[in-house]
Length: 222
Image (cartoon, rainbow, N blue to C red; front, side):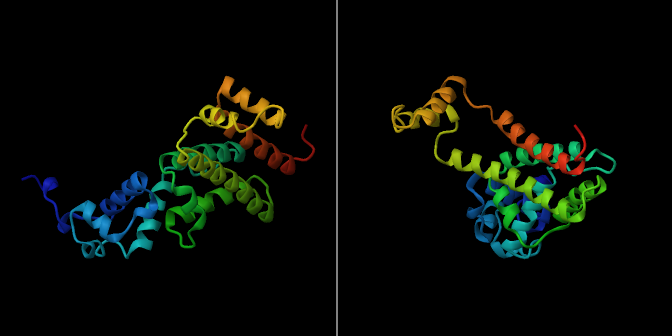
């Protein structure tokens, strides 16, 4: 029998435990995580997991660290606007792969080194561009509200059982007759006819925020 094929606690590692937890959260939702279920997935008793993680809270912090590792961290010397755009786009993609992560990212009070380094790099990119510390904090806040909020909105829409916006518009059409809701009805008809471009929607909002921040940084430009 190959070593890789041998089950049991002797072959557990923290990485293996966290990867199994990440897969479980992606498949079943983060609320499904428990030490007992995680142990069952790995083929061991729950107590064996405590040799590698401290408990469920440590597991939650650990899988969040894995997701953060998928997000582009601003690199030194990169233009702040480029860095913020790359971060936002990669974060949205990561939250698309892990729909539970946006809510967890915004609610955890404990932080691992990956999360701390991530936020440190973002603040450094903003202050390095010339944003005063207070405005850098507010810029970070508004960007994250947009990124996390967009991800949560998409997750909530998907949980309703209709993945496509045009399908949701079709379902809403009968509830919003033109004579009672003329403006909404026109929007519904437009969405049914043209569809919904999620990438363009995200880019539209992100550009507005970045334009506003750039206007604060360089008020005389333009």
